[in-house]
Image 1: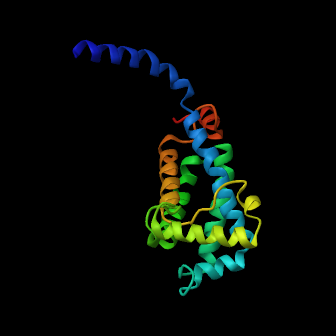
Image 2: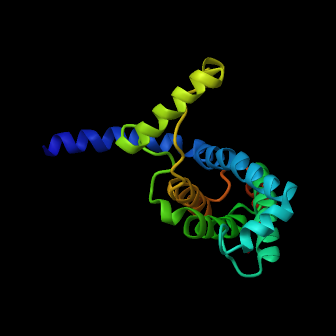
Image 3: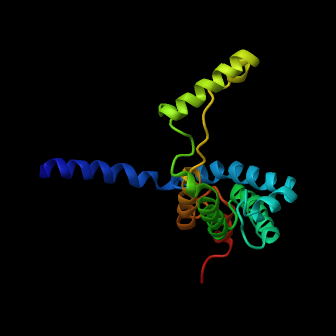
Length: 195
């Protein structure tokens, strides 16, 4: 067993240090994944700001948040500006913080009551019944083939899964930064090294 462990670590130590020059690829992948998520969420809020404010403030069918106008503007512009900063890799650690806050608020205020899963389990009896009924209605009254040619219908559960996933990705960026060679932060840190 000792020889096997030595062989494993010899291989490990020979291979993985060579990858250190590519360690910027993981933060780059996280950033590029998150850019369209936050861009679309933020621009949608901005395009329909009056509806967003109403949704943020309404306690009967909305989120019931205090100061809904301020909260809606903060959320929307945090997402849009955050997406742009993530795209170029500028102030990645700093922008990760308010974006994580938006994910916590989204998870708690919007998704918490729906459990974990973002998409409902289609094999669950009640979900399968709903999907079957929708399929029957669409086959009878709609163009079902056209409607499903890009994918199957699902029941959106709207749980916390995506908000938590994005939070974890942002948490990783908080610790790693934008990435070596692939972010504006990297080149700015070379121009202005710590003293």
